[in-house]
Length: 142
Image (cartoon, rainbow, N blue to C red):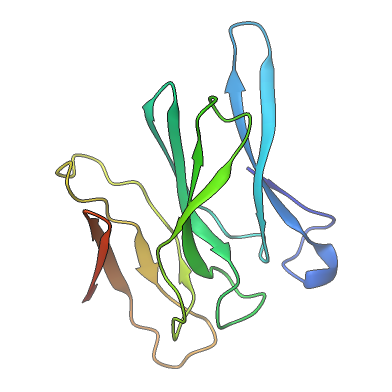
């Protein structure tokens, strides 16, 4: 979930802080992960084990400042979401913001699709699907 100072994406209503919420059997625990520059930014949570939780999302500033999405990063927690460290930047120096990061269902384990490349600032709005395979990114225009 993401919270902010107001209802819109404008910079003065940020920062837009990402949080993780988990139920411990008695209470909800809510912990901050990182911030991003738009209220529509979102990513996907991967719980690999009790000591390996990851979030993949557009948390880094992209070429369309304060637009939906940005550059994609991987965040990792080793303590069930209490603290987070950035593990990797998956995109850098992109021409467009990346957004709408989704966790696929029934994908082969060696592939981890992580999003569509979209931007509202470009007349060339053409989505791309990106796949991560063994720490490499591949882009496919659809």
